[in-house]
Length: 73
Ligand SMILES: [Zn+2]
Image 1 (cartoon, rainbow, N blue to C red):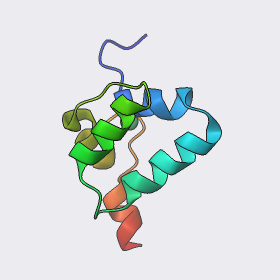
Image 2 (cartoon, helix red, strand yellow):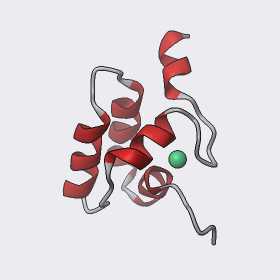
Image 3 (spheres, rainbow, N blue to C red):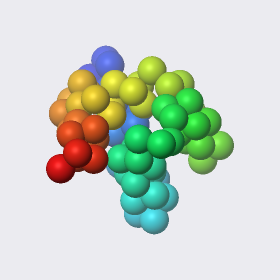
Image 4 (cartoon, protein in one colour):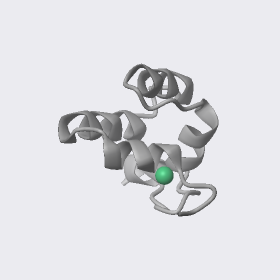
């Protein structure tokens, strides 16, 4: 187990498919703030702060998927 595993990746792996898909869409939507996503994750039982959300969005976690580049494409 990695010491610094990404909370967002964990949530995507752990949440039911529908919720994970919704979270994925929110991450790709630049209008949704990292703070709002973190609060939504916390409400869904996946406590997170906006720091890991921002890191995940920028592709700086192990997944390495840059959502901002996705939005541009
Ligand atoms: Zn991640």
